[in-house]
Length: 99
Image 1 (tube, helix red, strand yellow):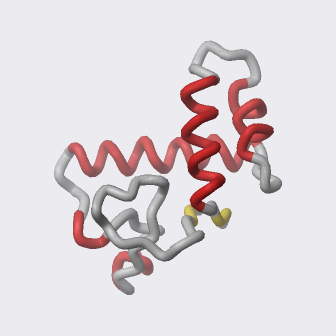
Image 2 (cartoon, one colour; image 1 turned 90 degrees about the horizontal axis):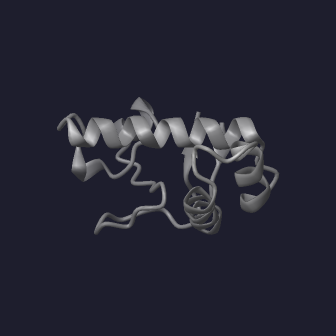
């Protein structure tokens, strides 16, 4: 499991905007921009998780009161961690995890 800080998420979002899908070595470049020891695999997993999460939200399969979940256990514990989106939901400062 990888933990993501608010600043890492901000750098991740910025790097995604800079390095589009046609950029050679995209995930490695984003990992370098994010820093914090994140690998290209960590970046790709984080991206895939967020794409899946957005798809669930758009399909109406997401509990908006739970914030961004870190998995079933986090949802059951009502852990309101956030993956870079502060759209009115509470979050635990400095923590964002995914598997």
